[in-house]
Image 1 (cartoon, rainbow, N blue to C red):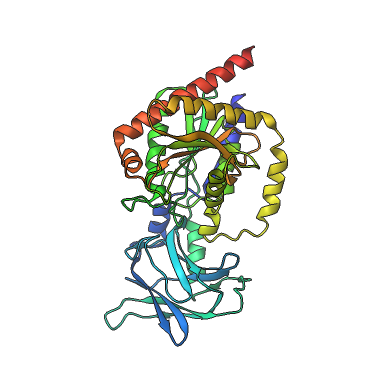
Image 2: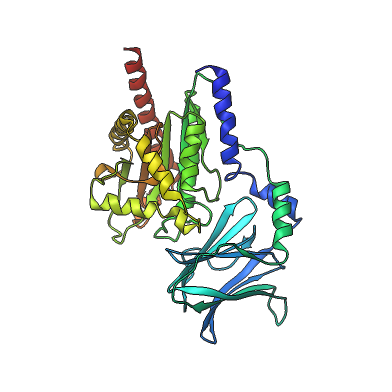
Length: 413
């Protein structure tokens, strides 16, 4: 490919990645010299309503809105140092079944409240510091016949000023663009989940989003050490990335391969082993189908409004008539399984397929790799071991080398 075209495609990715993996810390510093911290989050029952309280070390602006099917309340805040209950470990009460939090995009911490029954926001307000408590954001939820999705968010008085300042000071460059050496293949590594979406929770309490990011960083380093590849990561820290934006990165840089990295959990702590998934509109088995449904909930878990999403997916599925992409994905999956058996235990029938949204690229061979089960202590220990991650990454790079060697041989024939 001519260098000018390659540079143009690399530049294209900046418009996408800047919205998702920009420098949030720099943004936060520009908006305020010292960011607020959340000291507590709690749920109470009050006059037949359910009260949700967020307590801070200093006053913060906020935005609140409701999403339906599934029913959720979403609260956006400035980036905060969260010292309250961790995502996945906060229980529910009354109309609230649970909640989670995390970095949604640069400068924005998002709290997503899952509703146990239909509800409406009866009122929301701010309480100043007093009585031994810091400033608080209070949301009262009332029972409703059904949850009505907000037409427009409601905001605190100071949110508009914060949003304007955030927009003015948002970073304009990305650290994710690869070098423009046209002789190298480009690999996109996608660490699953992130930010407000923690993913699976391990036997020790560690989050999937942290485990897969650590592995992805190891894999990136080993790939680049070969001198054959430029590597782009869809996220390089703990931030939420919408599913569509993840595979769009691969399109924008004309990637030769897209690797989505995950680590599952299961009700049975005995189940363990790595598995590789490729896209199909018909699942290979019930387990693969259930896993795809769970992974495809990432945008829902992050409180994303999916209005109009189905039409977008439909257009992509039409493009998937390009059978060569599916065949290339399957070829790489089989090559990967053959290599990985030398470094890690594999799940039974390790190459599986189902309708994973993140694999719906029409022109980039794509696989989703479940590194193992965090619910199994042996798998979890392996994934937390620097030595084992290095061993697994080395096997993956051998598989990638073999895959491209075969492609190059076919191209020359």
